[in-house]
Length: 442
Image (cartoon, rainbow, N blue to C red; front, side):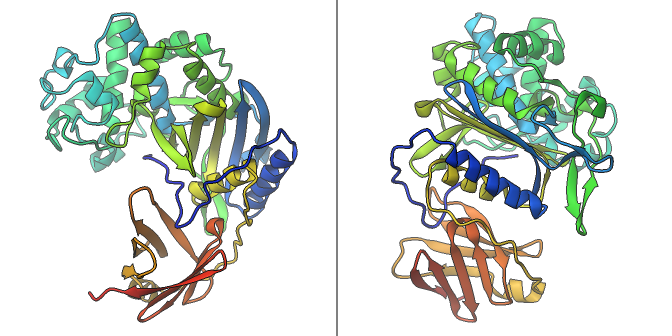
């Protein structure tokens, strides 16, 4: 999964000093219960302040069919959050003088296109130009089976380069599969062994390891998607296809503890941490920044099968937050906006999950670019999978899905925003303000 966007059309950025209080955790709990009761997610949240867990709670089921409820100790596959672990191990090897960031990929895998131009730092920061193996539809046939390292390398070696190394950044899981292989080759250990010795033991993690076939007796959750009004269990990927890109499972609590260990110097040097967290072309090395107002959290998010995970850390406040989910039926951004709003005691209205079905032809008729003289940005509306998506065409703004209340009125509750469409444009209502947007001519 790629980066999160937590920006809105209008988002307050002035925060008052927050006193320690149980009230904000009760409100977060109420919010997540609201999402859970409406079948919007299942999973666990963990919040850790200055190294200490201050709020952890589970919602929904680890095993829907057996009616086994989730607990804070339930383990979830964490998808691409694994990349933070892989990156940390690469920087450990740099600290140990066993690897250099400017070493070429050709030193390890010379048959890959442009290997003589691709540096280790390009793999870390997604500037390698190597095709994303997750976009390879042929991989769908083998990811449930047992693709070995040679099979995956043969496939990677067959790809043409997507762009010249170092010229831009484009997310590719292939980069981290290769980094995982490099860790194996340098340490002479499997990825599973390396991550246990180098991360799990050093950080004091109790419930983090390389995943295999799900075993509910080990408090491992199954994953689900909400289909036709019920949670449907998803097929499991074979762990060998995930590797250093997405191969770990963990608990929400372990993830916030991992973040604390990473930023405290337990795992890598200060110099390596500075390099790892340097954001260039939108990416750090195994992480990225996602904003909430004036704050920029560092971390990653991930998805695999029906699992979804978010891990964020705000160094200035020594604050770590993680969501480990085995069922998602809403935008995770919406949940995070609500959680952060409750945590920082900002005005926030719980979302109204009332909705209606709107014909695709009507949705398509609203597609286009909209402008208004009173705001400096344009808004693009697109129809996607039976929903409308609004995209603010302004740096730092994101995209979000609109909820249909009728054939003409749509809302986005986290921002207290509604849009009423007409053939000529739409009326934006937010925070007591009304703004008229006009649809640009085709």
